[in-house]
Amino acid sequence: MAKKLDIASLVSHIGSGYPQPFGNFCVRRERKRLAEAAGLDKIGVTLLRLPAGAWSTERHWHLNSDEFVYVLEGEAVLVTDEGEEILRAGDAAGFKAGDANGHHLQNRSTADVLLLEIGCHLENDTAYYPDIDLIASLIDGRSILTHRDGRLYGASP
Image 1 (cartoon, rainbow, N blue to C red):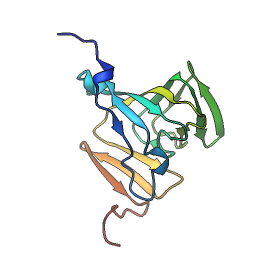
Image 2: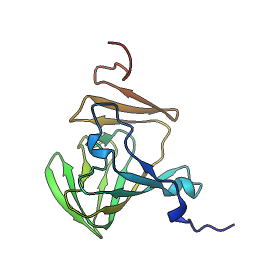
Image 3: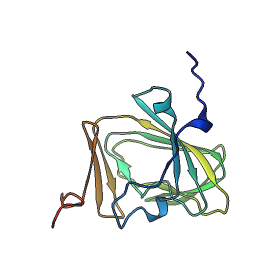
Image 4: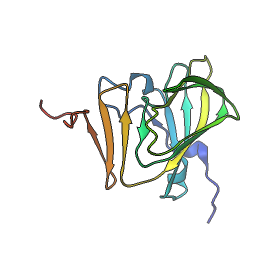
């Protein structure tokens, strides 16, 4: 059985799963799930394309998952609690699980940015979003989105 992935034939996941009114800057991002296509279930590796003006995510941090990004093409702005840093092709950044320093990447250029996102593939994790009213929990493989006060998104007030 061949191990080489035909990346061009993989399904592209375009858009955002954030509840409204969040995620507007993420609707044009494009992800290809490389690790999943290779049959891997303990690590996540995603090829992410950010068109001009797009964000990778809303700014967030994970309770249990380490994250790592590597820029393949283009230039992205990494936004953290400390401020902003430019990441260019060949640059990388890592984010330790439990470090409450929210982060995300923004493409402020006119060209696409292409990068690898690498992280743990856990059945139970929580992502906190310091700039918006959102907590995303993955419990037994199921995603649950809540307000900071614990109310489910889509539930009646």
